[in-house]
Image (cartoon, rainbow, N blue to C red; front, side, top):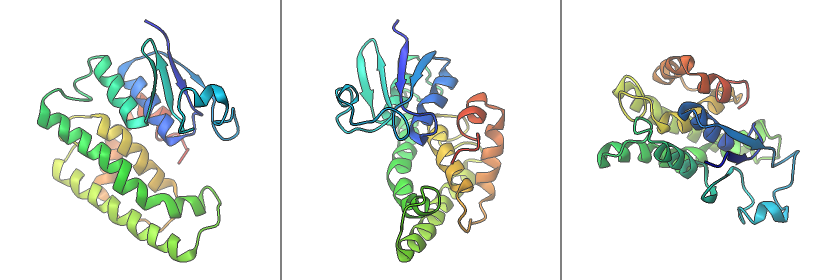
Length: 207
């Protein structure tokens, strides 16, 4: 089997989803630095793999694949990790709906606040305030879900939903906004501390 290539800088939150998934599945890989500060994403060689000019991209014996959540699903399925991505339709849907929620509702909420505070780009004060409020509101949805399961996002067991949302929660915790009190989120993050992938790729000091 061809060694998996992972294209994207290690600080990218979406690249870290893939790296954490590789850690959970035990898949060896070779990572290449692409993106801001490294090789440019408008390089023709990169655009040939992803014309959207975004990381991550993986390349294996079947060719290139893009979109971070899709890559995580692919790796779990390819390597038979039904604990991370179940095959039963409803159990799989529970994982995927929270992955999709992360990529849509939650991601849309943090952009204004994160862009201003961490990326240091100009943001209209009204946009920043709205983003901060909406980010906390979306995180309260996650907190309620975790309070209901008492364990992990999709239920009793750790899944891909915990990888993608764990990274989002880490970003929320590390961004200097006014944080809502979310005890279920804090307990969940503590439960994942014993996972090497969590420590290396999520709670590693990078938002």
